[in-house]
Length: 156
Image (tube, rainbow, N blue to C red; front, side):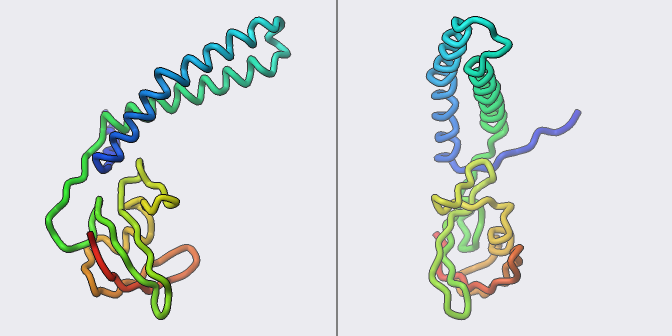
């Protein structure tokens, strides 16, 4: 039997997924069912775009519910490892060399990655290069756009 994928995440990330799951099950599901009922009342389903759209949304919602349930079931909560090195769940501030601006990212599992909120996946090129490094270290990050040198300023 194939082994299930483990989803490393922070406690806050797991709670956010649980909230999304609750919303999908209690609110969104009912909304979609209501849309399907209304669309059915329009008659002939073979040429009913509202019905088709509602059924597609229902499939998406049910798929998302299944995905989230799997992620929660296989979640591995990230604990602070007590070290001063970059690891999952920690925020790292670095500056691009020679004269870039400071950037801060929290390294999280892929399930809760959101670059717009400053949360990058542990599978990203930046995170892979920074994990295990300490404050003051200079690191070369291999990105699709070419190599980038950064210096770690702080780790929290």
